[in-house]
Image (tube, rainbow, N blue to C red; front, top):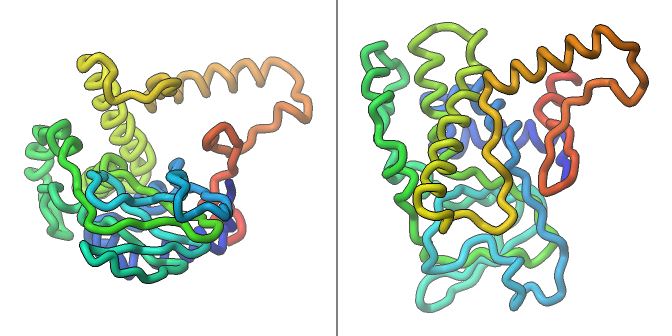
Length: 259
């Protein structure tokens, strides 16, 4: 599923100006663009049985969640409270901000002193990731819907990368910092699953992703091999991401290429 560069840019602008957890004082513009390059685009197809089909449910009332959602295309039906009051939401309706910020105890100050970084390194990431937000509403796709789903672990990685970016005053290391923070959190989750006997891991779960350093070494080896052999059209490098088995070009890079 691919969204247009215009829609990606609109989502970036909306998040950075309207949704408080993504304001520039918490997530820098550079890091927010990096966050939008992750595998966070979801698609629900049009379904005549949407009122009864569980696959159309984005949030289920009374269930614990750890993610934020913003609708990009389509409409959803929201059912709230014990009285089951209903209303519809369209593009740029968002839900779950409390799931992101409820337990993130990192300083909110736009200016972060270098001494703060020591406390960041000692944060108990595991306990923060386990805390969940219980919704008092149900959100169900009533048409074909495209939305962004940002988990707390990814948001926390972006926030930590922003703090490091500001403390080091260096933009050249931003991408590496973000990648490393994401890797740390993903590895932390995978290690926890292994220790708990895999009870949190669904069947067919993908293996633990390579770290930034491993990906860099692999890329260097591939480049060295390619340099010593002639290229064919099929060897042209493409910036793509694999989402649910489908190759998807990065929308943020599309924006950068058009500007």
